[in-house]
Image 1 (tube, rainbow, N blue to C red):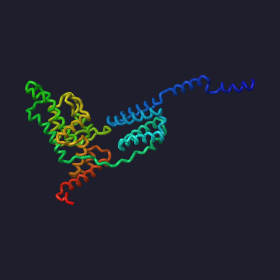
Image 2: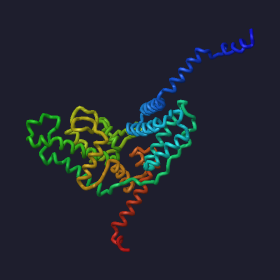
Image 3: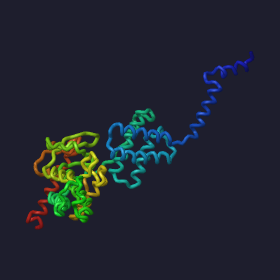
Image 4: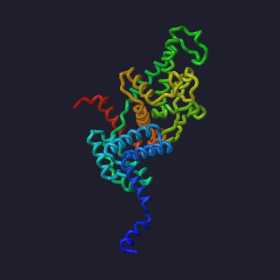
Length: 358
C-alpha cells in the first residue's frame, strides 16, 4: 500500500464519519437560520410558569411578566439569546433603563426581576452562576407612607355611611333576594343598584380602614372567612400566607347591612351588582369616588397606611401592627414610627396658639 493510501485511511477510520459530518453541517445550518430570540422566549415562559407554581400573587406575576417581556424585546432587537446574557449585556440593559428616565423605584423593580430571571437561567445551565451577582440595585430615597389624618378618615367613613343609609331614608328594608318587586314603587326599584352598591362600598371602606387590608386581600375574602364566633377575619396575604385580623363592631355592622342586599350566587364576600367578584380596579374606583364626595384625594393603600399610623398614635406596639398588617419584616412596619413623628410635629406647628408667632 502506498503512502498516499495510508494517509487517506485514517480519515475513513475517524470516529466522526462522513454521514455524521453531514448531519452536523445540516444542524449548524438550521441553527444559523433559527430566530435568535426563540430560546429566550421559551425560557421566559418557563420562568413565569414556575412563578405561578410557587404561588406568587397575581400582581407579582403580572409585574414580572411586564419586566421580562421588556427584557425579551430588548434582547430580540439585538439578536441576542439567553446564553448571551452576561455581565456586559446586563450592564447595557440597566444603563438603557436609566437613560429612559425611569424612576429609581421602577429601575429597582426591573433589576429585581432580571436577577430572578438570571438565577432561573443559571439553574437551567444556560448561563454562568455568577452573572446575577454583578447587578446592583440603585439606591432610593426613603419615602414615608402618605397618610390621611384621623379627622379626614372620619369624614370619609361618614360619607360612605351617608350614602349607604340612603336605603333607609327611602324606605327600603326588604331583603334584596326576596320577591319585593310587587311591593316597591318604581322609583325605588330604579334606584336599587345604587343602594346596593352604596352598602357594599361602605363595607369595603370599613375593611380597608378598620382592618388595614390590602385591596387584593379585601377582594379575596370569602363568605366563610367571616368568623363571627371569633370576631375575626381570615385574610390571605402575599404569598398565600393567611392571618387572623379582628374586625370592629362598625365593620361587622356594615358587612351585615351589605349581606342583606348582596346578590346571591357568589362565594366571595364582596361582589359587583351582577354577582361577579370585585377586582382591585373596582376598589380603586370606589375609594376615589367616595373621596371626591368630601374633596379628598384618596386611594385604597392610603387607608391601610392610616390604619397602621392611627393605631401607633394611640399606643399600639409595632409587633402587634406588624401582625395585623401581615408584614414579613418588622423593618417594613417601622416606617410608621417616622410617620407618627411627622404627624406629631405637623400637629404641633399648626394647632399650637403660638405656632404662627416668629
